[in-house]
Length: 126
Image 1 (tube, rainbow, N blue to C red):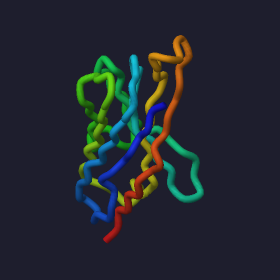
Image 2: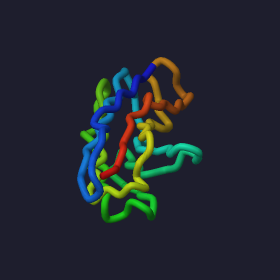
Image 3: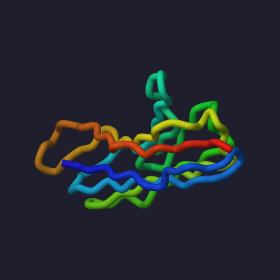
Image 4: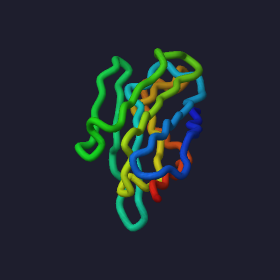
């Protein structure tokens, strides 16, 4: 099994910055991609940014140029993904969820799994 633990959320004024972290713990063979999703009240969960094991990144149009996703080099036991959020806007307010997709476990090949963190609240308000 893999556990995802997020941290770094909080309250920030418009124009401010926050950095989210997500640690994926568990013995894995490979994680195809990790990413961040968010869900605002009354809305569906939406993609924010993803990064593949090879470092390819993908951003939603609403955060391009303001958010940066990065990660630590692939590791068998601990993998961390970050989301640097700059120039935050009130519409960025949401619960942010970490995701690990197409995870291969040593003892459960060839199956692949998807894991989610518990979420961290980001509130942008003056």
